[in-house]
Length: 333
Image (cartoon, rainbow, N blue to C red):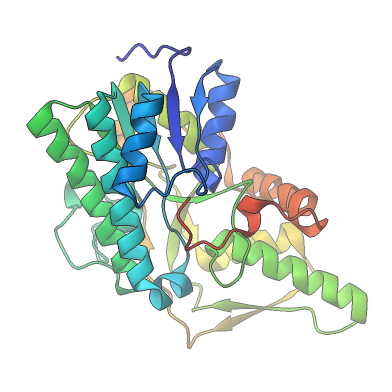
């Protein structure tokens, strides 16, 4: 177990994003009083010179590396160069700068899309690099795999206590609700909400179109649970291998859409656009290793979705469009 000094400087790279903002909230609640952040205007995380200069000036003892360019199937398929370049550069500059200043511990956050498209379910950590990736997000996945290997390389060559965690699909307050770049849960919430508003305003059709057949299965983790898991791992995990973070429970996209429908717009008609891709058929993480360490999620999906919709109503639908709610997902965070 690592004894974390809550008065020491801890840097959250990507503090305006979905994950980063949740981590900052959790660290504040846990009594951390020296949380370091930097905006894109202050530091371009793709620039080694800028990142190294910032690290030497601030010398964080701990680092949570959760910054990156993110998005759903549409964003991944239309901007592959941005997804692979931005993420590989961000991972490289931050990890190297942390090494340069002697950061005591770094947590790198990857993504479950690193695993093969047809991985055995549930997916254990040792299935990494055992088969072809899902084509709709392979550019992002390759960058994330490189991040894992980067941390391993610095551990092996320099003895750096750099660890990697692989979360399942995430959602929660602070998500990106831009339909051109969002993931499935915020996209569904936005679509059902907009359809309800339009039907109430004009009396028009209350229809919601969803990509695919609804047959794909996905696992979802509330971002506040992930924030708790990140601090838990910083304190309780130190290993060369990455570790999965999830609930160990999945459901079909059809079931997910019907749950969001029930919460946001029960009167809506659900229509499936089967000409669009489903993505990976199933993606359920084996979280045995994390559970054996003593961590469990605490937020069930329906409660978490209701919480997320409440945030959306207060921060986005009300007209108070926050930066993290409507940031262009391709911009480094």
